[in-house]
Length: 198
Image (cartoon, rainbow, N blue to C red; front, side, top):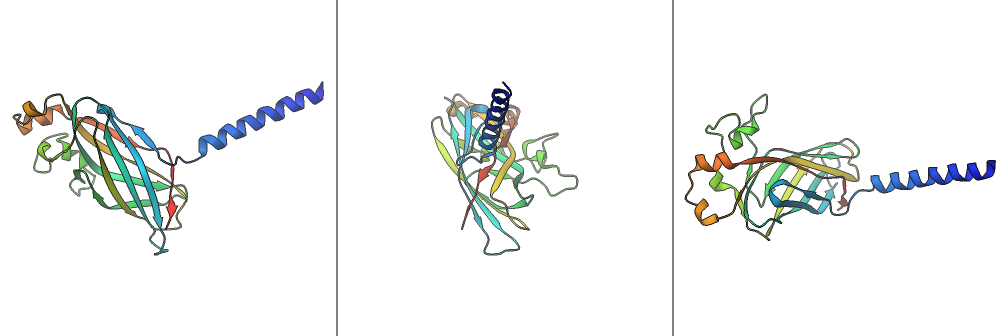
């Protein structure tokens, strides 16, 4: 009787440990379902430690429009990259999509990029947003630099603005003010992903 209880407890502990190990395993190609019918996927993440003091991480992210309408997208504000050893990486370059880092103010006011709380000279023109037609994808390349001993997994997060348009021809006739009224905001956030060392 005691032997059966001990076996049952040990089996339960083994199952919990196995589930925990699977849950903490980093994703090879992390996918984030976004608002507006969009989907983001980290295609690759590489770590370069040639400069031991300032490691670099490069990320290729595929942004797909899974919806049936045209999407116009803008990344804005800080893009945060952290690793599992506690290193915070600063964004150095971002290409392949419209991006507005925001005015360099203290406290940060990067939401001015999308006209929040008001439209001013720092507001990014909606005509400059990246267009992604239904069923299409783009590749966004990001390069980050950190300071310290790098880890083996990274998490990426940031904010994006988007508009979804059923008829792109009619949309072309709208004013910037009308387009700004249609803008929605969302958060881009990935589960930990393993980085390959170069």
